[in-house]
Amino acid sequence: MNRTRWLQLVFGVICMCMIANMQYGWTFFVNPMQERHGWDRAAIQVAFSIFIVTETWLVPVEGWFVDKYGPRIVVLFGGVFCGLAWVLNSYATSLTTLYIAAALGGIGAGAVYGTCVGNSLKWFPDRRGLAAGITAAGFGAGSALTVIPIQNMIKNQGYEAAFFYFGLGQGIVITVLALFLMAPKKAQIAAVAAKVAASVKQSVREFTPKEMLTTPLFWVMYAMFVMMAAGGLMATAQLGPIAKDFGIADIPVSLIGITLPALTFAAAIDRVLNGLTRPFFGWVSDQIGRENTMFVAFAIEGVGIYALSVLGHNPVMFVILTGLVFFAWGEIYSLFPAMCGDAFGSKFATTNAGLLYTAKGTAALIVPFTSIITTMTGSWHAVFITAAALNILAAVMALAVLKPLASSHGKRARAQGATKPVAAE
Image 1: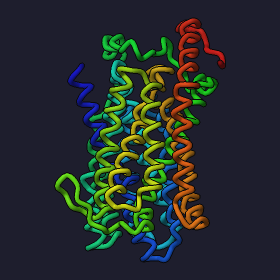
Image 2: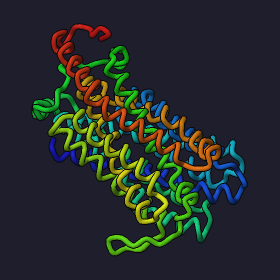
Image 3: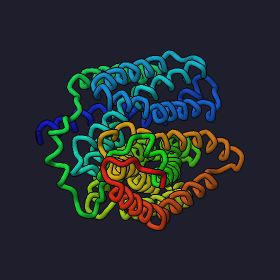
Image 4: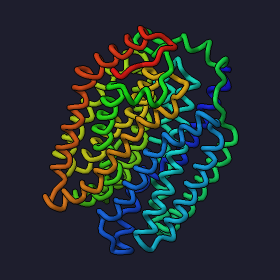
């Protein structure tokens, strides 16, 4: 049993690595597409928003299929769509085609992401924070090793070739690994379910998606997820344009014995830290509680974004601060799914976590407006200040609102018992 669940976790992590470039590699294609076709930057970033929206808002539907039919078929479907999307991007000569490819890629990536995270929550009821964090780390850090190869291919062969070959390779790997994925049987996880840290309270009953949507706890988590996701998605999509506008994209930076252009250095470090933070803060939350961990991480994120707006014109500080921002942002993809599993149970974990994950899609709608606001104001300052304020607000809410609400939710669920329906709180 123990070996099986760790193998399932490994398969999920590799699948997540294969879809990471679809989000985190996007920023390298924005300027080349703008230069090639003369498309407006904000119009190009609409494709990014379409990708995020379809990646997130359809996850509950994909999660329903996973909970009913198992993870294999859904991930297989997702792998085909992911490969098709980037191949289509390589042939796109109009924004319409780019948007269609973004939608296909989002559907595919969402199928893979939602399935792998949900499956980890089911296999590891005793270590949800760590398991969700390790799985999400594949998505956060999976593109780190391909930062330089993608940039080199764009430079030497054109962005179309990068889309085509990386898309094809990533899609093939996902479809092969999908064949090995499976969900745990109830008997397989019964023994480990009791091994839960005392600091993490877990629901004694299984909430259906409909029941979950009636609870204030879910909507507070959703609002906080949107607040946190908005700033990080802005940095993800706009990192290249920000570095270009700051005038430091190609300036060499030397750190830890490595010298690279500022944008390349920042992108590589950001991916690594964005991956490491997920299992790290997931493990911390297993020890000290989800809400306490959220407060610390969200506060660091707010300070980091503000500092980036003030000091980011220095190439060395740009690299360091973007690393800090990504480190303090990526943990939302382990903390929120883990808390969702704690509060609402394992049986419908994939669908329930998928519903919460749609908050990322809601936040993505803000990304194109960051380009518009920057054009109107002549700088990124207003965007950074807004993002920092949202992060600080979310940090305060973690302790002042979420923690007491979660405690009340848990007591009510225990009082109602395992069989009685749960009324809206």
